[in-house]
Amino acid sequence: MRIIVTPMKNLGILWLIVTFVSANCARGETSTLILQGGNAIKGELIAERHSQVVIDVGYDIIVVPKSAISMIEYAQVEDPGSKPLIEPDAVRSHGLFYEPLPDGQTESIAALAGRLGESVVQIRTPSGLGSGFIVNEDGFLITNFHVIESETEISVDVYHLVNGRLERENYHEVRIVALNRFADLALLQIIDEKAPDFRYVPLGDVTRLEVGESVFAIGSPLGLERTVTEGILSTKTREYQGWLYLQTTTQINPGNSGGPLFNRRGEVVGVTNMKLPLGEGLGFAIPIDTVKYFLQYREAFAYDNDNPNNPYRYLPPPTIPSKEE
Image (cartoon, rainbow, N blue to C red; front, side):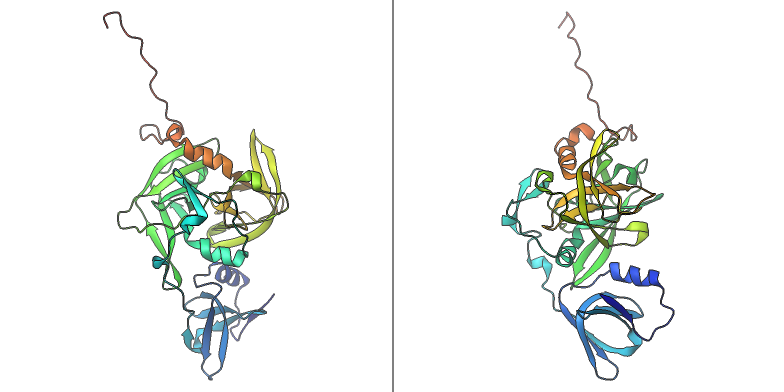
């Protein structure tokens, strides 16, 4: 697909990338740009910034200066508040998280990115940022341990769909629930009383993955929020330091850490956490089965305020009854 930039000059490639991947508009629906001369451009509104609008007309992506636009007729998007977060008959509850039913259908990445966008979050700490994803409506979310390591001041950016647009809301009331330093996993919860029910993503099954199938990641590499990257699953059993990882050609960079790796059914199949710095297309993700184990046995990894660097909470040993007893 070609990319056309209309009259504006000196538009940097970096800006174009940021604009393209930071889409905050309704995807898959037709909007109309009414130009100053009376002509109209119809297409999928990808992004809108203070001075430009990016629209996909099907065969080209066009960047139009706002000075050339007299009016924007936005796509009509159904209010998601009237719809369930995920169709009840499409998932089953498994304690703290949800699993999809085995007959899920594949969809295009464009459709999935728009539907799953509200469940992918950006995590901020004083020392940096990372990504994460919400696993249930109560605000429980998964990220990497190294994203929040030694941090207690944590905030989470969630993108709520409001009137057809994704609007960022920053939540500062976040608690650490459990940590697993060795698996590089962390469980957090947004505890803001004013927060709505959160939109979540179902957790898939590694045994159903096939080498060579299409996967994609959503995250904030290098701070470029809401970036979507696509690749294939290279192998399911790449060993590194005693742990098995999913290897993928999906581009992963700093800031992607803790974000979800999806299959084409919209299921999380891994948690992106590292790449080989001297190669391209060599990304790695923690298998979702490891994440499920962590969630199911989270009490064993419960965060201890008295010893925040220890990912395990050890119960006191049983005492030997005295003879007097």
